[in-house]
Length: 128
Image (cartoon, rainbow, N blue to C red; front, side, top):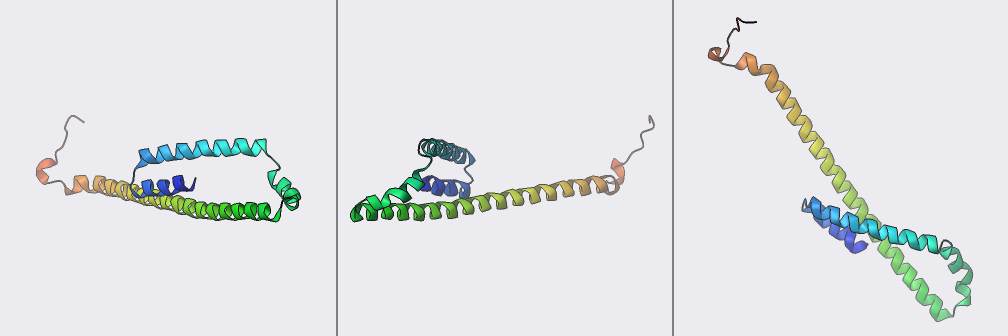
């Protein structure tokens, strides 16, 4: 998941939105798999807490090391996901601002079009 998250950020930076959609699809499939595991082992954390003392010291230490590494990876993942989200929000806001500027410019142009047109282009429609 972390590799996909870094790939996602790279695709955002490159403005590669078709590639981004592929990565988001891959991440969605992974979330589906994680959801299946969660449903299959709903009380895994509680089981770990209650049974970890039954393990040998070496086994318990190995498991705790794996859990610590997993937490570190998840922290990196969350940080990168926040960065990606903020980057997309910033891009969306810039795009909205550009669209608003274009719309305002178009309205100003329409307002002044007739008054700024050369006299030769102004005419009276006598059929009206």
